[in-house]
Image (cartoon, rainbow, N blue to C red; front, side, top):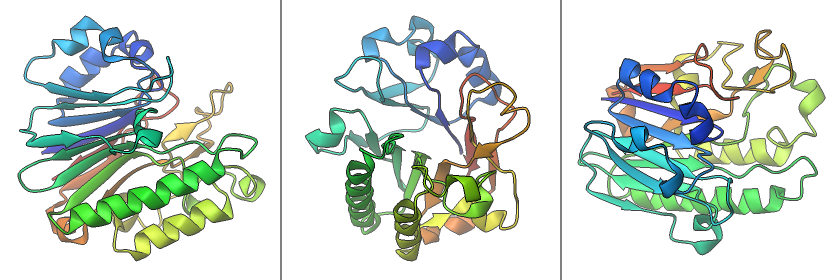
Amino acid sequence: MKLISWNVNGIRAVYKKGLVEWIAKESPDILCLQETKASFEQFPCELLELAGYQIFHSSADKKGYSGVATFSREKILDTKNFEKELYDCEGRVLIHELKNFFLVNCYFPNGSRDHKRVPFKMIFCEEMLKKINSLNKVKPVIITGDFNIAHKEIDLANPKSNNKTTGFLPIEREWMDHFISQGWVDIYRILNPEKAGAFTWWSPMPGVRDRNIGWRLDYFFVSPTLVKKIKRVDILSEVRGSDHCPILLEL
């Protein structure tokens, strides 16, 4: 089973840059998208008609903001939102139950440049941890998406100059430590412990991506019992179309 997660920074924008062709080429069994920035009615018709895929979505009340969507060829037994209006009105979470595991497609809040949304972000992080810990008591969990946090210095190009930037604040990194201490496995880092330059987001400023001045903000975390099922994990950094690149997990 091949899972791909991608913050597309606008599903309509990335559609115009060849999304349908890329999906056909990669042929994921499940595709999790974040920051779709569209209501379901605004999704391009060609995407809605992709052969073999069920489509699930959670869109924000605010137009052109946030949103997550999942395209699945695997049988989904049940799908829920976070079931808290505070987060569901921003279209941040889809929780899918499959036969052998739960899959959580999640777009974590950005703390904003002036840090005004950092408190909201940290509450969301704690609530999400409680949610997946609860799910994990039923069956294993895969949680994927844009966490908007670079965990360690190895996870961004310029850690020293960004320790007061949201996404790399001590409070955010400490939460990630706490998250991992609960048993959740950052499968890419476990399998690539020393790999530097492994980034998933780059500033849109000219030349930044070509010079790989980036951050690793997108993750697959898995329950410990799933680690032995992992066949491959990768960062598809060559794929353009968004300021993020896709990440891949094969079970």
